[in-house]
Image 1 (cartoon, rainbow, N blue to C red):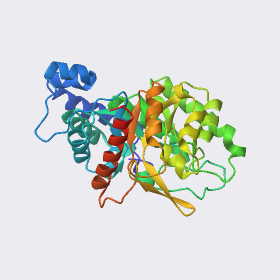
Image 2: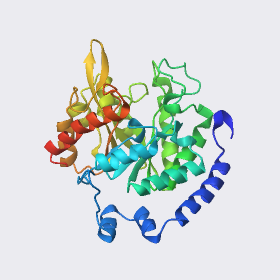
Image 3: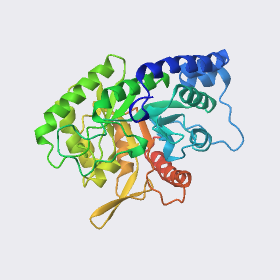
Amino acid sequence: MTRNGYMGRREFLTGLGVATAAAVSSLPSRALTMVTQPRGLVDALIGNRQEPGQAQTLSSPFRVAVINDEISQDFGRACEVASREFGMQWIELRGMWNKNILNLDAKEVAEARRILEKYQLRVTDIASPLFKVDWKGAPVSKFSQHGDFKADFTFDQQDEALERGIELANAFQTDRVRCFDFWRLDDQRPYRAAINEKLLQAANKAGKKGITLLLENDSGLNTATGAEAAKVLDAVKSPYLMMNWDPGNAAASGEKPFPDGYNLLPKDRIGHCHCKDAVKKGNDYEWAPMGAGIVDWLGQFKAFKRDGYRFAVSLETHWDGGGTPEKSSRRSWAGMKQLLQEAGAL
């Protein structure tokens, strides 16, 4: 282990190769097919079995998913709920077992793969904390949070974080890694060109390895709204940088995400979507269950369907009014499911 308990790249790769090979070699040949083949083909090969009390598998033009640690830090439990209760075929990976995704060791990666196989879940993306740090040389941001989602990596560790994200994307058989563009500065103008160049370099590096970076808009980061995201995407002209569109975050930043923010975005560069809702409380915003806030999710889902969007719509509950993360996610999923059905997308 090296700085901040962050495993060195060579150590991780060596362990990952051994542990993953052992885990995969122990699976029957039919299970190996399930890891690599599309879900429809798997169902045709082994039958779409449904256990008593299990939710019917969802059918949607989108990759309907949930971020695993919004349900539980127990990865097995999160996958069980997502698959057997929610009926999902996709899941987004951010953290598990009280670790950030980038800090998983090789044995934990192998165990996570085993659990995904058990519940027949595919991974939408690696929700990494890449570039969720202060921009070096700029005044420290008032939004700066060390240890956010159990990530405490420095600016100088970001190249390692990118490599780790790519390695994990390969291990979990996805081609997408989430990123940000540094904690929000009071005045980002003196640094914006350099930040854009950093994004371009990272995207091109990832692209050479078959990976696309997904830039998330977030109130605490330098890109918070659809309007700001449109400017960044126009400046960073790489096919390997797409948008992780988060209407809830845009709403919490004072933008009307749909239709205003969405209409500004290049539709062919939206590669992922986080689903949560918000309500305004005085001059501030609070999270809400899907469908109980100010975001026009019905309009957004209809527009996605109209515009041919085919990537993830991933539940990021955030709202904690249900008593526990699992109960809160269950209630928010109920709202999201209804909205997708009303939009003709489920």
